[in-house]
Image (tube, rainbow, N blue to C red; front, side, top):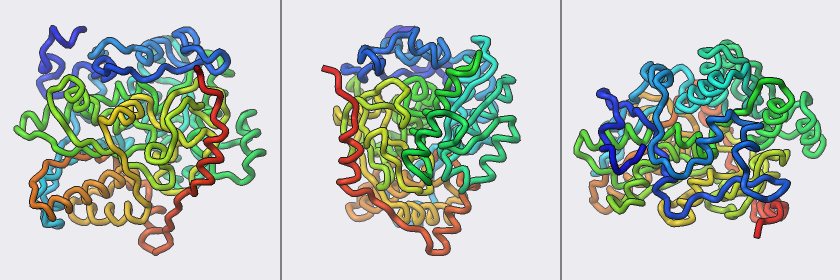
Length: 458
């Protein structure tokens, strides 16, 4: 499809749900750097990627030219169970803050998985089933992605093996049980069930794990299991493509209201929800149609954008995945055991990294106790208990609204409320009991991990 020939409204159903995903890479003059085969340092080919990923997903991963990719009807029918998701004006929060700003949030928690992750999970499960596979493997941090994928696999009758970061496996037992209820096999990572898991446990005794560790185990499981592929819940181009339904609906709803966003805010771990929310808005910036102030918010304990290095790095701790050029803290970086498990990843999406490097977005990092204070404020006035990940965006949205209070500007602030926090009550208990602590890695810790970056291609 060509974006020049078909008007924007054609890509929407009558109920404002997108018919197509938006591929921001088509409008980027400088494309994200390609994934590299770590053995050759050459761009990974479709055949090489297809050994790990579903073939059609690998094609989406490498597609830099098609601005709009049609959403298969079966996926659209599934989306109708919970999409379009609501764009809500936070009147009560505005009143609480005494700000002239207008605050809107795109709420992605109105499905059983409790987050935006289902948007890509159902797509990846669909393509796996279409290819004739019998199972998929994956990793999960806080558990939202694992929950979403277990639901999607149940829908398409696929076997689902989930490697859950050990600290989250222990902190969030009920999230784990939801996955098992939907039929998934859930293993704490790093485990002793894979060779990579054994190696990581030997190198980091007593480790609480990381997404990088869990990715390595899931990939090993996939390549060693017949008729199985690996799927990922963030970072990859294909995932940001699927998540673009968030931004497309947000942009459509704002146009319907006659509102132009001034500030757009999303939490940032691997980049899936942030990239999905901002892509259509960035597209307008790339085409010279509009300007926006876009803010990526990451935890101070895992600050890949604000303190990392823009370089090629392994996507996983076990160093079995392709190399991606991204803002990274080093694949050996294992974040502290904070409660925003979905943001504990050492690197950032290549798309988000390139946009950040070009200056289309800016980034900030916030500490855990400040995040939960913002979550408490939001919950008490808006009636939704937000996920710790989402609360990073809430914290900065409140900060931006208070700046408007000082200046008298009535800016339109939009943020992504990526999910609910009802499975995060251990974290809320620690905050309420005053037992929550902040941890910020030292320059020396980060430098040590960055010193282990792979040889960079010429």
